[in-house]
Image (cartoon, rainbow, N blue to C red; front, side, top):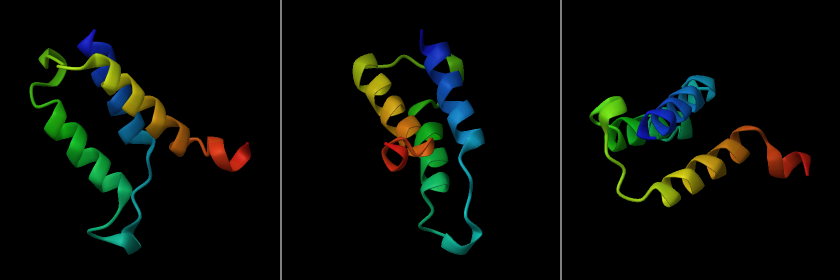
Length: 71
């Protein structure tokens, strides 16, 4: 199941734009760093709390798709 979570986070990182004007404080860059840190072993990473991981992904996906802006 960690494989699916890892791939979902990677896809989100690919779609998230990087703003060149916000060097050092860009959310996309921070997200990439956190995903790399959380999934050090890639698809073989064991996730301690899968529910929290899924909630985090869903929250970031809603921000990325402008869910609250369009609501």
